Length: 210
Image (cartoon, rainbow, N blue to C red; front, top):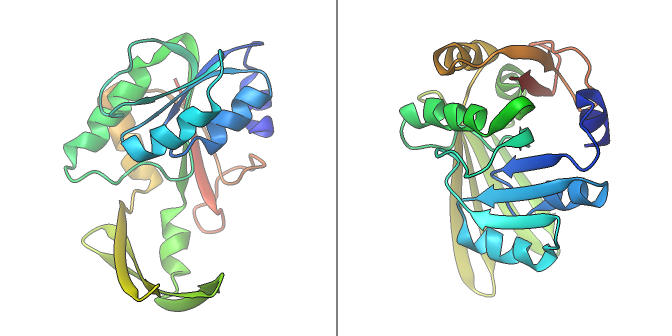
């Protein structure tokens, strides 16, 4: 966050919108280093948790990222692969249009997404992890243009089975969306130190746009 905000040269007490903020981890930190932050997420449970950390310069609200927010911001962040989970393909484009709409005239947008090509090439099909005495059986696979992660575990005699999926979007996919949404791509970085993006080597795909 420090590297990113320094690169963007955001003004003191800039207003930042954290889109798909989850439980507010990034919002809380951005606020702690001096920014006015609004975090939005579609999950009522996540926002209820994040609201415990609210203060006069930190606010959380349940909101669908496919719809523009009611205010404009100096920066709009969508971090840690919080994109591409939609049921309908057209929602990807609608969400990007909303991100652009949330920017003020001098604002910058940031999407931090996985480097899909490297993720797929390095995909470990099955793995087992034990955390605090609970064994998680994890199965990852690619199907119909999506990356799936199935997690199974047992706790207190109950069996749990969860599946996540995210669309395997490439840089070209984002460029196509950006063109349709009238978004100007400024730069692409490959990690959190903001090294240039390399499709074969980079761990992340960080898109800076207006």
